[in-house]
Length: 470
Length: 85
Image 1 (cartoon, rainbow over the protein chains, first blue to last red):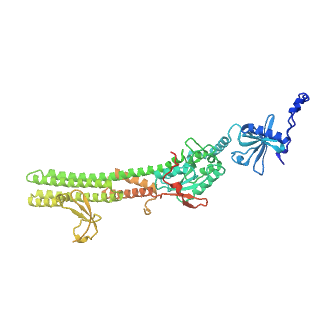
Image 2: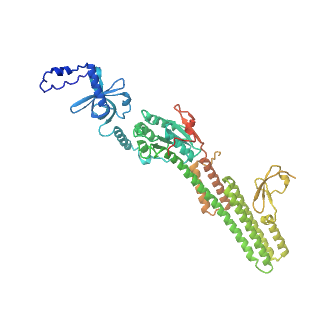
């Protein structure tokens, strides 16, 4: 059966009286067409005149043939026209044409010669009033919203440190390149797993949904970016389709939507945990968390070291206070001179500590954290030893002073002086430490060729290698 | 960094580091105790740094069959003439 089997309606009888019989001259000018010729002329007239027209009407007799083409009739109050929409165009429609639906059709008029019929070949159909996309968008948005899928409570925060970043998008186009570029620039060691999907056209939404369910199964992926670059509303449509939107809403991992440009909003954006205005921005969001944590750790580290340095400074002041007491107590008689001597020595000791602190300070700036632990510990241990030793020695000095034993005091002072590392170093001596700087080298035979040693001189240190042992 | 059973994860490490720093800053702890805490703090911050840098730099494609394969060079090339800013 063909639609064209349906007869045209009989035209109303012409109410005018019959025209007068043709005159001879009129008969001479008469040009008789064949039916085919006439049909061809009609076709030319119609097809040249009506090759791009819009028409609004109600669909009836709507049917898809097994060829996949849609045949229908468009009608309104007093007229109707047959229409056809070929499979290729039909496929792009977001809604299904149905009888009774009011539509606006765009197409061209064509003539079917064998039946002497004309019809409109539709390239596009949309519902009268609202656009089809808008209609579908509004309906789905309303439905998802009622289900609570847009609730702020559902939003999860991104992982502090993504182990692997899953990306579901097309390999063509700027989006994936933008994402990779940002990650490379901001987070050089990013591990990215890309699931390529179609992001527009038929089947794209399902592809996106499948891509999501595949990528969340990859071990280590703990955040997902889904999206595409900019385009028309139709291009972005897959991200408004139910199957894709639900897949995003149901994603077991934190997910960022990044569809089109800043001004494009899709339903995917409403259900994702985070909406990025562009794919690059999505990558920035993933990385921003990492930067945030890195600077937080840096600040904590600064405070950690700062608090230990304070501690060291407090120990130094205690040492200074002990020195000062010793100095004042000896301001009497012959002992005043020795007291000054003690004062000088303790001054030197203080200087030695200061120099050492300053030296450590410089090293501290340059060294990595690992070394720092050892330095600070050794410095504190050294200070503590000196504190105890200094205290003991000063007490001894005071005792001796009380007994006015000048000679013994002198000897003690000389000994104290000789024990002061700075005094010795200032005279040009050097101290040689073993490789890990835990012991002073007193016996060359404890070292072998190739061993590393550190030599401390009055100002600074030298890292040396043993070339010969004699 | 070898697995450290005393540290649960990155976020736990940060939290502990925070409390260590706080204790060191406010308390007049015995020297031994502050040294012990300091050492723990350094250990924690090392752990955090290591985790920050841990991820490998790699770009992979998950194909239809669920297999991972390296991304094509065109996608990962340094020079991106198509990139629009």
